[in-house]
Image (cartoon, rainbow, N blue to C red; front, side, top):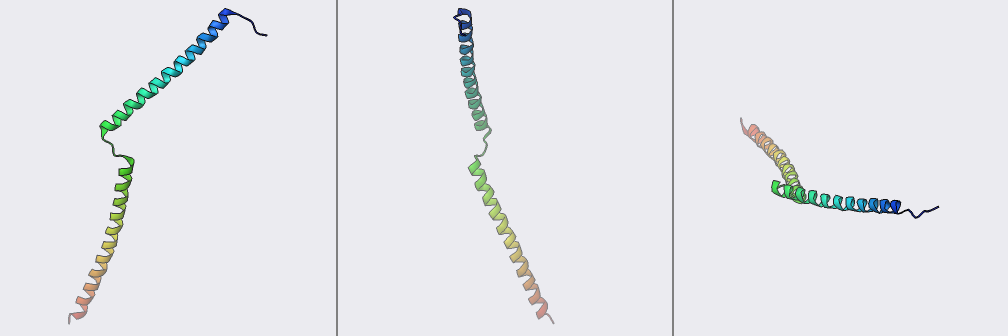
Amino acid sequence: MQTDNPFLDSMARLFTDAAGAAQSMRTEVETFVRQRMEKFVADMDFVPREEFEAVKAMAAKARSENEALETRIAALEQALAGKQGGSTP
């Protein structure tokens, strides 16, 4: 059963308005914090993720090429040592 009580109606309206104000305040705080964090990150001069991944891939490729060259140099040095050792009387 529902009654027409002005006190309860005003209290319900007050709580509804308070909830709306709290939600609005939360949105403003989140926006403010997000803006401050973005400014902080921009001021710290962090590298974007895409650039980091590109440099990481380049380093991995250079590392594998370096290992391949080390293997090739070792083989050439061994072959050269074999020729020098075989031609010496």
